[in-house]
Image 1 (tube, rainbow, N blue to C red):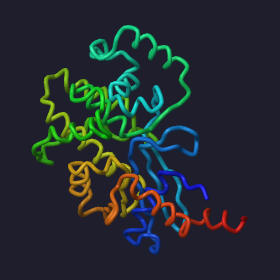
Image 2 (cartoon, helix red, strand yellow; image 1 turned 90 degrees about the vertical axis):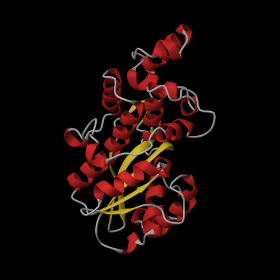
Image 3 (cartoon, rainbow, N blue to C red; image 1 turned 120 degrees about the vertical axis):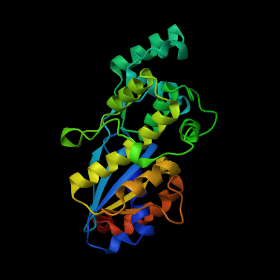
Length: 274
């Protein structure tokens, strides 16, 4: 039985927290680096709604170009190139003229898109001069988080908000980070406000959907600062859930697939057909 990657992430949180057996809707926030989507694009910045055994994708980060296959996940500079369309001033120092020519040409006819929040982390890390090439999985995101010694939530501010129709633009978010850099803001301050923005986007989407329960999973939620911010921002107004005994990364996929198969109505219908 085929079960989509991000739906499995969501089902793993629902299963670990006993949320399949209640009637209230649950908003799933599933952010990671790479997952094959139902529309044949690369997902990774997804919002789902679960209620009455039905799980539906209800939103996502706006698509941007996926470049160079698996190489994009290894080279954060490629995420920066994609999101800025090769026009940021720092590009010249990160690529050779020949590379700029080749990747610019690819952008002209590229049909593969992504909504990946993991790649947004990469682009921000590259833009801030933290990491252009990963030596291990998730290095750029880890180094970005390591820039933060402490933060005061009351002084944090969002760099973007949810746009009309639930629109979330990764390109606009990166442009706002670039503006902060141009204004001379400290790297740590920009990193804090970037993570605060992501947490605040979750709150804004939850408010717009009218839900009381929010469940988060996917590799992005290995970031402890982001998780702490989500808990602080949603406290009092929402019930927030994360994976319990399983890590939020792909460790939970097989369990999530099993939970989806046992608890979601379309999985049951497929089994009847067989």
